[in-house]
Length: 323
Image 1 (tube, helix red, strand yellow):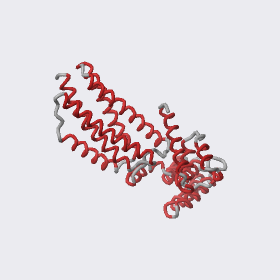
Image 2 (tube, rainbow, N blue to C red; image 1 turned 135 degrees about the vertical axis):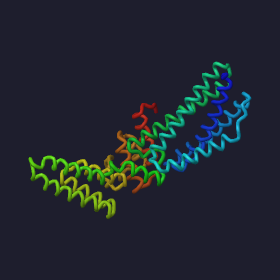
Image 3 (cartoon, rainbow, N blue to C red; image 1 turned 180 degrees about the vertical axis):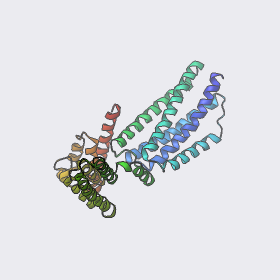
């Protein structure tokens, strides 16, 4: 196969993938956590549409007539992708987005080399433009995934169905499940040592009963009150891990008092001072606590935006991306 034929085949593939990329970006707009991210995603979708036109122009210049089916297939692929990913956690959907961007970047790199060999400067310039665009998107998605891995909140938020899927996927790490696992571990250990220390069985049973009551209350009573009670029970029983898990769940709900916040005297800070204080936080957990507290108590947009920016900065550090 000649280099020109290879280039035409690759450009056709890039049209299909770029069309899918555009539609994916447009479906992500509704998942943007902030207006700034929403604008960025809209611009990304518009730029993808421009790249599709540029690739199509090069196809025509090389004598490769773009088929009318490819754009339709691209849109259909994106629609199907959006539908299927509703049954999976947000991180899985983002990993698929990242895989698409890597494929686009790698194909652009291949086209660049082909264009160099075929002495086609315009195709090479196009390939370099595509490389730059997809490298930037890969970096952005990598940071978003890092934000999610650090506990978020990420630039993108899960849809209602994705939250359900994510909760199910992470059920083993949820506080209620954690307590149940801990009880099972204690009981199993006691069974193994029954002959050596029979009295521990009764002790473990008592603890299991206490945790079972806490679990039952968490499921049937108001979440905040139940989590606080479960935390008290866990600390009384000396189970620091379970108590910390309950507190983490409270923090996620924004159910913390001012004296539990990582910024001293936070409630008395002005918006400007709160923004400055948030920028000094060095862990994603602390920033997340402030965001949840703001969202449920004060709702100061500028503070939430500053906190989101700080999470992104910490995520970039975690994955080695220059700010």
